Image 1 (cartoon, rainbow, N blue to C red):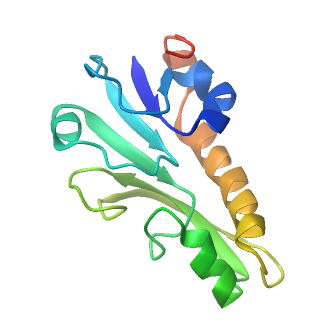
Image 2 (image 1 turned 90 degrees about the vertical axis):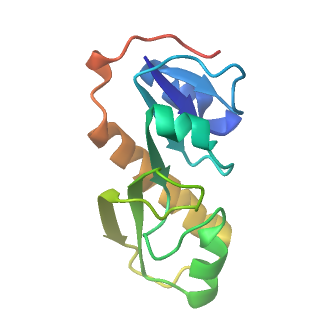
Length: 142
């Protein structure tokens, strides 16, 4: 079983891929893998030391943290990306990069909301490409 940590607004989109939570479940359930999908809270050391833990980050690796869109919009980026990191420490978005995909926007982004919407679209595409749904036991929301 996979445990997916994410925001409530992504539950419906992700529920076919594992057991979905919007906060850390206590006690933490036994699982094969923990997936942080655009989850902005720190994963406890006890979790990432015990389970394979990865993070789907809706920004390029050089834009770490919980709100990379503000900086990207301020810079008026024309190119953006998404990254998959291993989680092996308490630092945000600094683990070994498992995958990174960039995409051209074609114009200078003006708002964080605009960049965030594009980033989440491509992050979800990366999520689907990384996972093979038929391998998962579908559990729905917790």
